[in-house]
Image (cartoon, rainbow, N blue to C red):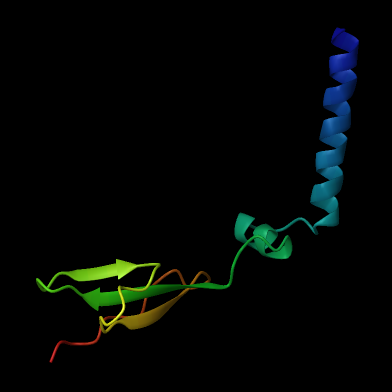
Length: 87
């Protein structure tokens, strides 16, 4: 039984090493995820002001009839653009 577990562990390690080699030994996890198609390029967030003046930010648009701002979040930059000054 222990021999079978040892053989299974060795085969799993060999498969992991082969995948690492075939992926080109990525320098970081983000690069590996992008190569595998797992990392999206950007996301969209919506920002609006509620009736009481509270600023809301969400990945879903506000209710119909509420004016909002659509912002694109780029994962390679990892920041949102600075807010526009209030008028």
